[in-house]
Length: 584
Image (cartoon, rainbow, N blue to C red; front, side):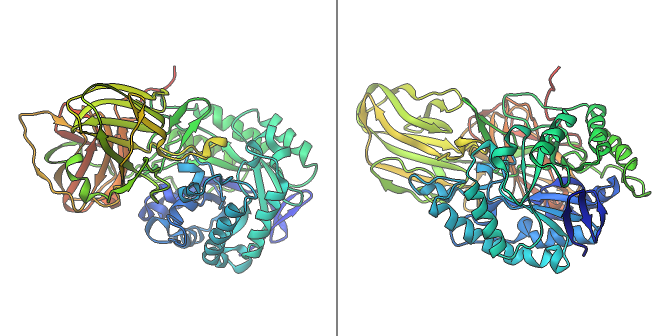
């Protein structure tokens, strides 16, 4: 494969002038059976390159582990890019932001008291060294210097928005080189952060979604020669629970792409295809108020969540064709979708009744954080005894992120981090009543200093001013639901949570579709054991994307964990998404 060079007048590939026209496509947000389809549509757009982050937290879920299986088979993704004739920009972090849980940093780092992430803290750098050693052992054959598609590797990610320690960046660069990276390195930062986030000898690139001329001018001010490149040209945005679905006019975004390409700049379109935060993988923001990101990462991108071209795809293709070769092949039509239908969830399993099948309790004097329990995603159930009868006030130092409180199995209230709630009044029915607190990790913060985001009940927990002792902390990662004992639901009574609900449906032929949970309140959904993600009646998103490869001809099973209550026992399969209302 040809090798990328950074010259004073721009990029060169095989000693010829080259412009990178790239699009963001995160393999971990797309079912692996659909990678080839998305990459083919990237080439048909006129892209010569695709960009992907690498999520450290998924590849190394525990210290000493490193996974490359299933949807984490990065070599398979790189092979698929090669088959499509596409180059790759690899962004391994260690921090990636990406609206991804903890910005891709593994939660087990936070088990270390006082650790400083994204710094020269020896504990952090030792973990990064191990991560890069494992990652690059798999990736090195795919570097362009070894005949592979990876033409450049990013150093850190928007570091200038977080810190200014160039020695830290230099140490990361040394680690990448030590572990075999011999293709060009680059950094990316927003215009105001270019000075803080760059490293001499490493190509600087800039991120923006508008004000193209100003962004490129600021990059040129910090880097007088060399290629101009926008590494994240934002053409849409992400959504948060309780907000609206964010969109950007296709003509407006295409006009800015025209300005970029007319200036001779290289570009990475963020996102070409956003995909989905399957399972519990969404991140969150906290700029004074905690805001968790939704399950969909549609991002109003060129391909929608199901991989179908949008009007923005056509508009961008026309722009690219004025500046680079675009294949003459027609753009594929939208893929077939599931026929609409209703599925009744006829079986039920109460969560509090069956916690023994979901995780093992750990006794301690105080509630243990998720990180202390060695847990990354999901829930923790905390249980203790209320030492009095009558009126009581529960007070918690910090709730990370949402706590449902039960006394003798009966719900008495909710404490939410987002609304800064720390106290809850209830009536204890007896001395020795059981206090149960189910805490949901709604997504670790992925941007800014808030990435040091430990989960669970943090700090002192008291009732009527007296600290509670003798806790049991039970991790509930919900990675396996096989041991739950379901019984037939009582159709005469409403479905009250927290409880799992299960039903089945029969398909002749699998196809992409959407699961709608109208009438349900908040929880998670699985199809055939595959975690579709979170739902929440507060919106904006009201459907969950169902990739065709998780379905099968014949009988299919839907499982829903409803945390509160539902006014129905049915869910809907749909052929169209509903990501919510947009801003007027």
